[in-house]
Every structure is written in structure tokens, then in C-alpha cells.
Length: 484
Image (cartoon, rainbow, N blue to C red; front, side):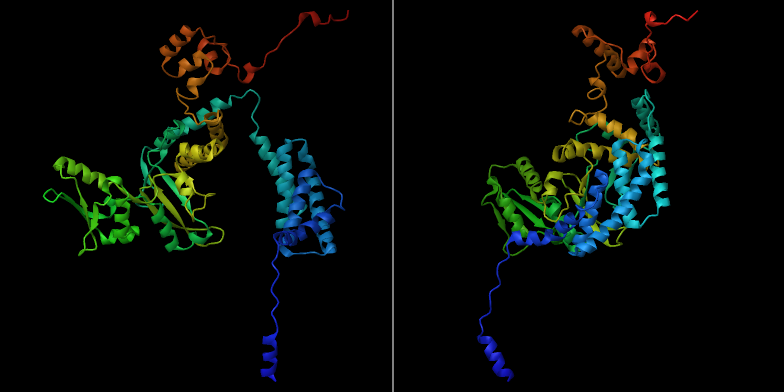
């Protein structure tokens, strides 16, 4: 019986599966969100920012669970709306105190946290009070010289810094410039840092596997011939250069003799002149021109040793470093480099471009733009101060970074940047090269309106800050005579 039935089924034609269209897939994926939107439209709307937060939360929940029943969705909306109404009621008192942007951020974030952590109304009130308290503490008084306060707040702790370089945390082989020298090179907007460094994060596929991380490290690390050669001898009798390769270094760098010969042969001057030794698998011969004497041969040898075999330009060393995720507890690998080349590294497969960092601000500006450079500048200055145990309010650092980047180009604080571009002659002269500024200004016939702090201090009149910023004017003709 079984034999016959199997015979019959084998004769039946198998129906071919219909190809699924992309539109059908998208429609299927969007179904929960569409149903959620449909049900949501029946309810009275909350304030704009909160309504968007509620919608996003609902669509996320419905999409993850895959609910299509309108009643279930309606019940969930009622619960979320109740939380939203409580948030609006509790945040109402803060509306008159906080600016619109901060108020909107308060109600949306409070709603999110209230849903996630199931906060009670009392806990919501405590969060609201804490936000209002923090905001009121951070307000600057009208007329306060924020630039002077920021300069003093950064400059004074800066003098407490040490003048040493330190080992990079967890990496013995790398020295990193920290402290005052690092702060100086940041505010001077130097083209390249004294110790250029990159922190390369890997994607999900490569970050947890040590072998895959090492494989990407080999791709990135610039390897020259001198790194894999144990000896390079000059033979003037036969006009040959003998290169003896180091087997251990070849294995470490992931190279073979044939690959090295291929790279060397690409050069026009060496085409057809590079030959392997037939007996020894670690020896290469290069024919030199017969006219070469010892000096020319030595220069030729040095040029050959500097030949780049593989890797990214300017990345001298790559060290894989093991770290632990504080949230998941999983160990993952990060690549620390000696040298930077952000544009080239971001193109390498396996690198996470959203987390990879460079300590060269100019390079970040060129690759990612001025806003990214500003963010990096704030982070680098803050980290430099924190490493020395100096607590400087981030707003002072942000003001400094804003001034350095506000023109769309990274500028230094000194006379070739911010200080040298001030409109006041006296302010420029007070900073550096006084006589030169005064002579240049007189030759051009410049006018100084004495509006800034520095120039008013020089001539001995109250600077337009604090009390002196307020001016009282009186019209005697409008004074009413007292009634007799």
C-alpha cells in the first residue's frame, strides 16, 4: 500500500512557487502600522510632540508583536493615552518656566520613560521638578561675560595639567600625548596631532571573532618591505640586490613571497628585474643598473625597503584590543592604530563607520564636515581635562568649539585665527604683536568703535558687561510737574 501511494505521488506534478513581488512584501510589513494609524485616528489628539511619541511607540509595539486585531490596538491606545494625559497634566506647571524646545523634550522623554518603567505620577513629578531645577541653575544672567568666564574656566585648570605623555589605556606599545600638550594642539588647531591615533570599531560580523578582527587589522596596517625583510644585501659584482625574507614576519603580516614579487614588479623601474630564488623560498633577487656605484646602490636599496606592500597609507601599526560591553557583558574587539587615515579606513569592509574615531580634528573636518569636527573638538578637550581630574562645565568648551568652527572652517584661537580676526584694532593689539597691529591699522585708517571688553579696559572705561551693559536715557521734556 505504501509503495503504491508513494509511486502515485511521485507522478504528480509539483506546483511551482509563485514569485513574491516586493510591493506585496512591503504591504505585508506595513499592515500593523496601517491598522494602528487607522485606530489612532478615532481618538482625540494629544499635544503635537506627545502625539508623535505615542504614535511611534504604538507602531513599534504593534509591529514587534504583530497584532492585527483592532480591539486589542484600541485598548493599548487607551492605556498609552492615559499615560500621555498624566504627563501633560504633570508637565503643565513647567510650561511657563521652560523654553518650548526643552518643554517638548521633557514631555516626550517623560512619556517614553513612563511607559517603559511604569512610573507613578509622584515619580513623574520628581523628574519634572529635577528638570526645572537643572534648567534654572543653568541660566546665564543678562550681561554676563560668557566668553571671559569660559576662557578663565578652561585656562586656569589648564595650568594644573602635567607635561607628560602616557601609554594608551590597555595598549603597552602606544604612547599618546595627553595633558597640556594635547590641549595646546587642539586650541591651536594643528594640522596633525603629535601622536595620531584611530579607534576602529568593527561591524557585528567581525567584532566578536578574534581571527576576523586580526584579518581586518592586517588589511589596514601599512606593511613595507623593511617590515618583512631580515636582510637586504648589495652585490656590486653581479649588480644584484638580495632580499632575505623573515618567515615569521611574513606569517604575521599575512604575506607570501609571490605577493611581494607581484607588488615590486608593478613599478616601471623594476618590471622584469625581480626574480625569486629557485632553491630558497624566502630569497628574492633584484637586478640593478650596471652604472650604479656604492652610493647609488645604497639609495636604491633604501628606496626598495620603503616600498609599500599592503595596507592603508599612514597607518604604521594596528593593535587589536579586547573590550567588554557594559550592557550585554559580551567581549568584543576594537582596533587601535598608530597613525590616521579616516577616509581610507571607512571604505574597508568590516569596519563600522558610525563608531570609528580619529583624534585628528582636521581630518574629521575634511572627511565628515565642520559639525563633526566641532563635536570631536568638544569631546577631545573634555576628555583631556577629565583625564587630569579637572571638572570643567561642557558649556564653556562648547562655546570655545563654536567660536573655532562658526565660519565653517576650523580656526585656531591665536593671532592667525579668532584673536587675529577681531574687528577691534585694540583687541588685536592687546593679544600679540602690538606694534605691528597698530601700524597696520593706522596705515589702513581703521576705526575702532570701542565696543568690546578688551578695548574698554585698555582706555579705562566700564566694559559693556554686567551692570555697565544697561544704559538709562531720560527725556527732560516728558517729566510731569508735581501737582500743587
